[in-house]
Length: 123
Image (cartoon, rainbow, N blue to C red; front, side, top):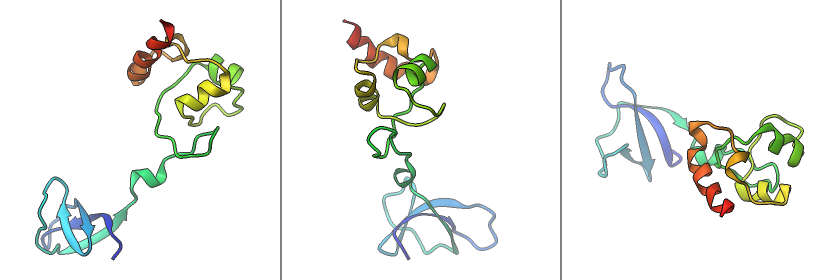
């Protein structure tokens, strides 16, 4: 069996499935550092998030940067034809030829972290 995260059912007749990590045949329940007893049933493998990260529209590498800029920045300055997509912050800055500032981001809770970082560009 391939190492990774799987759905497991620990007892026969139970409808409860738990997430476990399997490494070299040993089963580790999430949050428990030691190996546990053999599960009753091992279900479907869970695809790991890192392998499904979308690619940056500029450099093509996986991007986990999660933010929303205004349409003016995305369409007009960066000239992306699609309304949706992923782009590393630094790649977007290179594409528009300037540092991102607070006003470039939509006023959403999702953007609080990047808006904080953008404030340093306004000094």
